[in-house]
Image (cartoon, rainbow over all chains, first blue to last red; front, side, top):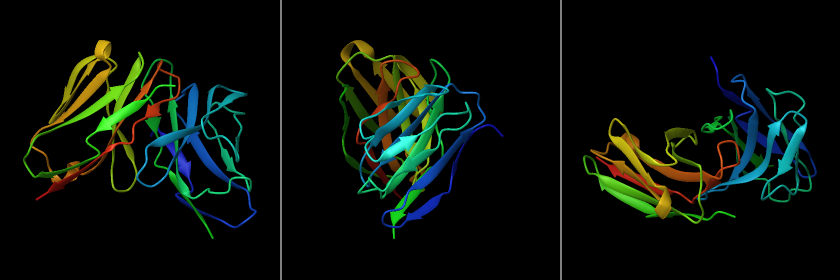
Length: 111
Length: 109
């Protein structure tokens, strides 16, 4: 089945800990994106990548890091520098000139 | 950057009623999408509609690109239509989407 897979669905972070959220797609899409959603709000862009080994910061990149070593994978690391990481994180991908499709998301909470 | 405004912010409907959701945006765009976010958080693509009109069952959408707005019509609403509807725009097909804050729809039986 083709699609975008995010894991885990739920994640808990301790103070001072880095955690990594996984996003994998088997759709052969060029571009991938990470968004953050806070309760009652729309989505805001964290990072995006249009090709392998290249990525750009979005509006709220501070405290996050990404890599794009393979076309299929775009993991997001939430570092200890992100002081308010509790949110719903959504990954998306798209081929050129076509609509974005989203994974089912990861809910991150602080212990 | 692009600004996206959605109205109304909240809407309560009786089952079977019709509704219109509006999305205004501040710049010319080549990508506009409507999404439905269900209670589990999943974002479901409804329409990819940078211009023109499309219909899918009880839902239809119209984008007037020259006037920078889009409308989502829901007819004969059902309780399963409840959730948050987002409009999102982008300058091109593979640039990041800018989201509005959404319209929260509650359909009551």
